Length: 568
Image 1 (cartoon, rainbow, N blue to C red):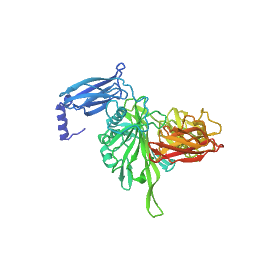
Image 2 (image 1 turned 90 degrees about the vertical axis):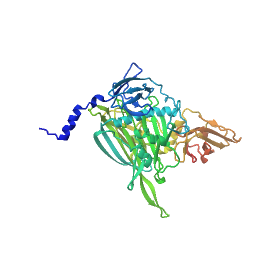
Image 3 (image 1 turned 45 degrees about the vertical axis):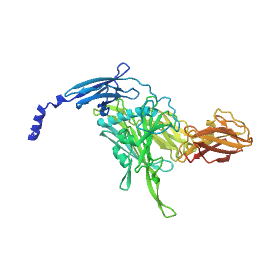
Image 4 (image 1 turned 180 degrees about the vertical axis):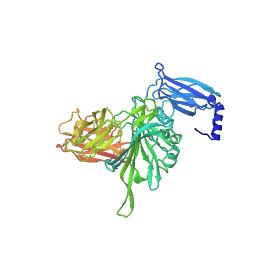
């Protein structure tokens, strides 16, 4: 027999006579597409007040429905938006006591304006809170914001059952090679597998905050990126794509030249065909000088689930490990000794009822050996899967192994540090992964001669000429795009040029060529005279590199060089 105390009995009696359930105001919205009334799953549906400000929002379910309950009395409208669709809004309507209101919204297909976008290295002025009709930055931000809003709603909407794999890695300071790694797995219900600090705290106290003698590094989640404090203190601009993946980049950076706390700058990368947000990469800014490095930063991936929700399936943060050293002047200085990278991967996510929203369990992988052009095992080559942040480094035997891949065809990219510094990255190699098996892949990194021959393949050149290529970088080793590169020499009147133009206004005894660096900072001259003293220099925006002088003997295929423009 169960016994109740008197206060609880009184509460039960009060609930029996209270008509609260009957008086709750409710709004039911049904969102469909313009293609025969197909339900729009995962549309961001917002309840707006008379000033157009959002009261609350939610995502539509499998039937395209969004339900708002316990709506306060007043006048409201409902807005629905979805990636690749034009935003729709109802007329204003009145909510009275106990009323139930139903509204239908149709989302019309909107031409995705992101396809075919070409962005120069200098993409214009950074804009705070991008807006305005016809502005490219505003249009790209609008699509990114929809995905962030859906991810934020997913985080706040309720707990999913996540199976997570977390890792901690120690990385070499110079090569980034993984020195050690620890993995842990856990499973359970949680609102989100990845959570940041409140935006107000991060803007006021910094994205890097001291904790005793250590520092805590924070990454931005969707709610932070959508918040007023973040949007009021950061500006946005278009970013040129670095690789051939065709993604559209929306960059952001802190406003103002002076900040007292660490901040972040980075890029959101969107698929130009679907306009869906793929991932966010960022670096920490305004750190102490000895802690500053482009390696210090992180990445947050975004993925749309079949039920229309958005989750963060993968993320990582890379932090510096500081040590002290005493110089000849007996002064103690801090320096980056190693890097600590911590991250996580969602293996599977399920609803509270048990239905799987996305099976991400490990099934297979790719392993193999990296060798140089002579067949010698090569250490320290970065091996990664295109479209994922999974990267490993070949060990002393040249061996590498990438696990955790589901069935499918993958593109594997091999990056040699020396060749990358000269602006050259080989094309990725495709491999099929089958459940429970490791695909084998042997890769030979090209020699400098191979790179030069490949770069000038199909270009006719004069007998007695050699090849010259390289990269233009700034003082921080970042590629400089569209830099003019000139090479000149004396006493040689003709040479093959490939895709170059003859330098104008040279003396009668001097000849030369001019070209521009591409998106990777890479440049090439497919035919310069062997045995002549060459002078090469790069310039952009009235800034010049040092003039480099050398000679290429006829016994060599050619030479690659790096030109650094300090003023960039």
